[in-house]
Image (cartoon, rainbow, N blue to C red):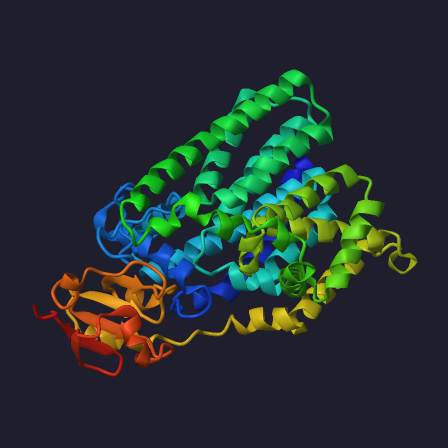
Length: 488
């Protein structure tokens, strides 16, 4: 590492921003997982809980929300293993250690981002990029939510930064290739959709950017392919596990194609592009047109425009490939580092060409970055993200369920079928019963499953959509019913 880069990473400004950002997050680490994308939050936290209770075997980790055998492998649980280990080391609650692991992943991403941008652009651009990364409403909100995405984006950014460094020097020694291989494999295992953009798209773009020799290109692509091998192996095994139960068959990769990728016709519908784009840009810079102008400035004014093109291709490729997924407002986490770098480049290049900022470029860049964050904070979606920083409400249903059931009782959850928060916070195993999907064997109702939690957003008149009309029941609390076996 050059002395200039070492000074950059050791700068008081950088560490001051990181420390202040951490202090902002500490009070919310114990927040319940009751708002937003509850399935993703609690599915992740459930896996952390399983490791802390039953040991670190990723092949048998519990996810007790789709019925027996209580085992539904999704992505490889690298994040969850790290969170569980941290929780056991520091004796933390599952929710606290999960949020803390996300926060540390997020802040580590800021460090890697600063080092990478300092090398590829300059120190001022790195400071602006990290400032935006840490303090936009998007980063403030999602940087502590219990999601695997920031660990995946940090690992993939690290992998690409290592390769970028080697290719820029026209020399990628074996030690850099090994580091790239390890980080890339872990990033892909943590979340494959993130790795597709950073590595699947980013690596070929880097080969184009540096115009490497055929030998170097072959070696780099071979290493990338090797990094994907564990991901392919895990996906194939997890699909076989999910195929064994009719309640999890819909999660098999082949069944999720339309959900993940969307259709060509959907991509031609501009209305489907506008909402995700506006949600993201508003929570980063306040106005979509402002983001477009800064991206244009980065492309047209930067002397490193080929680097900007690489980063922009990575950012744009994500929604182009996984179109349907980017209706989820947390999915841009995957390319958030690339987006803030491009915006930071635009900010710096605009300021450098402004006669008003002559001699005070750093101050002017800081003020412009602060203005962007302020605009984002008062924008529609940015305001929602800031509002999300408030403590979410507890889940009273969890205490209700615990009061009328025992630890080993199995629960059927109706009317809240895509949220495992009810089961997670009540610490019970059960089945999230979907209106469209397989039915339980009637012989299990009232014998194996003795309780039903009926969510108040689902009209009770819809009972017959889920259960045989002859099934007897009695209310044991406001939302919980005890059910009895169907008579022969």
